Length: 114
Image 1 (cartoon, rainbow, N blue to C red):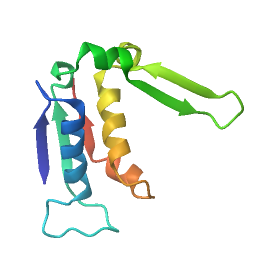
Image 2 (cartoon, one colour):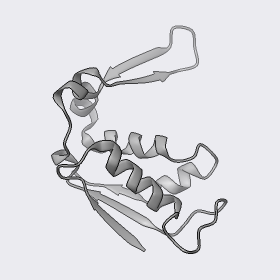
Image 3 (cartoon, one colour):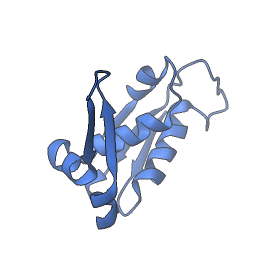
């Protein structure tokens, strides 16, 4: 089953939460928590999403390498400039999925186009 979500004039979080529920299989009758569902999700028009200017300046993504002094922060605007809107939506959906061993397999069912 394939679902297409149009991100035009929508907020990042709304699109990501909808995609995450589809990917987990929660909207199917055969939902099982410990299996990857066969639902595929396409997100289109990510570059036309509704992102406030304040959000671009204030939102920070924090990554930690595991070593001392290895904390890196990056603003949303610089992430978009460096990797594009695809990365922003990918990170949003990834962090809305449950953090277990199925997360990587579930993310393979997600395709994002700008």
